[in-house]
Amino acid sequence: MSQSSLSSEAAATRFLPPVQILVGLGLAIAGVIAFSLRPVIIKLAYRYNVDPVTLIMLRMVFALPFFLGMALWSGVKKGARKGEYAPIAGRDLALTVALGITGYYAASFCDFLGLRYVSAGMGRLLLFLYPTIVVVLSALFLGKRIGLREVVALVVSYAGVALVVWSEIGTGHPDFMTGAGLVFMGAFLYSIYLVGSSRVVQRIGSMRFTAYAMTAACLCCILQFLVLRPLSALDLAPAVFGLSVVMAVVCTVLPVLMTAEALRRVGPNLVALSGAIGPVAAAVFGYLALAEPMGWLQLAGAALTVAGVMIISLWRTA
Image (cartoon, rainbow, N blue to C red):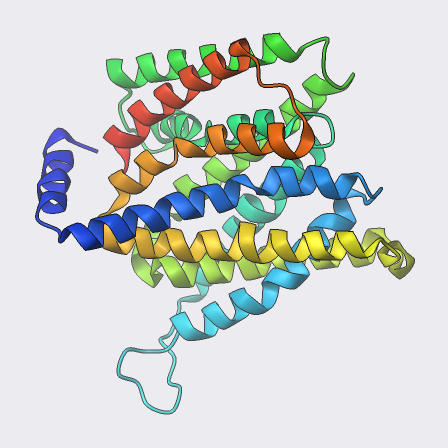
């Protein structure tokens, strides 16, 4: 984002009613906190010996009806009668499905696999790096220039991650580095989704794009389970189903809706600013619910990573 664009948005925000700003920020923060609960819920579910293929399928089964409803609602023409739907080009539909499979199915599956070996706080911190990856991908494939500010932000962000990783090597799971690599791959795939979706979103709308992409991801997760697991794999403790419902509704559907409404009310920069709460919230939840360590090295590393990502988010959000 250019300096003039940032200044224009900041000026526009100053003229918003205070109540609208408070509600918008409240929705953005609530969405971030709800999403930050996801790695903790996943770790809790793993205590009941459920595998990632089954767990991600359960999450998507419970989320699918909501996204189907969103897809139907977002496709209705404004002022239309008798359920008339706005058309969507075949190329846009195919690209939306492909990006949904990449950014929500494949990325989420990597995240679920990685969280078997890393802490909830570590997982959220690595996933939070996606804005830095977006900057690099945009420079490589979209020709966007990386300036000094972005370079500083990248160095600060990855120095923070290196500090946290160094503090956990030898004290965590024996396959910690494998888990960290999987979660980072999830962040990378999600970044591809963000870079590739920008023009499609402009043509079909953000809500419709998200609904279609998430529906495709849900169907992939369900199909994966049917191919790889017998139905007897669903013979699980009732707590797993309860946690899956919480993960689907509280940690998936609600954050999508709250973030979309926050963007409408206050714009992307204030929403990006609220994202800094994510890694901190996940670390606190992990400490309280899972007794995960939260020493000064982890906190310092998280602070560096958040600072670097915020530099990029506040100046490049568009």
